[in-house]
Image (cartoon, rainbow over all chains, first blue to last red; front, side, top):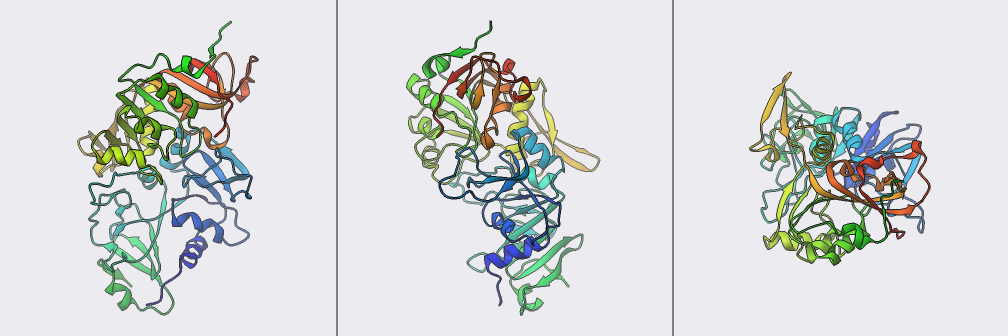
Length: 211
Length: 222
């Protein structure tokens, strides 16, 4: 099957982020999305630790430990940026002021349930961060992930088996194999990665994909 | 004239007793009062409840308190960070209690404590493990979880500028939990990079001095 590379997947997500959007990029792979937003669009990036208007990485030697994003990477400010404290930051997230959040996931269910904060491994201390606040407050939740686990087992399920982050919160899923919308009937195919057939992608997906 | 300045970090943390609950500002490497934490370790108080976003990384900050066996309980949103070895060690050995709180709920519980609110309904966590055992309500078809205010005996803060009245301002993303924690604790102690004897310009004050009990200059930025 044809698989998008991580950078091609980031570019595919970035293509759907419109001009003027306020966007939160989750830690890990979603942070790369900003590098691929088509030229001519102004997107304002929010980071939960208290900045709206995250700018590019500073040049070497100009890093400031008090200028970081939620992934703890060094950042600069973009024009029009602002700093604020945590209550305000989460008011933006929970209060529906942001437009889009892009998150990674362990599992997504056909009803839009998301599991991305804890596994069933009890000795691994759970860490939720801001994920639960984001998913209840941001109108569009885009999930960006590999279509299957490393062992080939499905991540797009009828029902999540890991602890949930939020119920019925996912809008769209971007994987290396396909783009799917979450609808009232379940997953609906938006597009297949070039060269893949629906039959092939369905074979590695537990939930039904509606054409 | 009101003067909340104290001369040393040791003097600032002296009121902290065994078993105290302590909010500690910071997110990742930003806005952590490293000087006050070192002074607290030196001071010797133990059996502490630490309320912070993270549970320390490497060998500095909260990780030092965990390493020193001073912490009985951690209340945080994200204990597991790259390099959070001391948290993991204490957690795996069952030597500390952990309460995981969604980050926005953590901030709002602290805000509620500081603002005299008896609790609030949030959609965050509804239907998840973190809402188990909590009161819930459905309002206009949407589920909410009842969350309680989170008070603390002390807050340790990190600010960029301060004055004798306890007014504070911050630098960059080092603001994070510091202003809200200043309101949620009964005794807030601020480690400040530049303390002036002149008042800060009122328009530039982020944390009004009423929320701060002592200010100590600590010029080192990590």
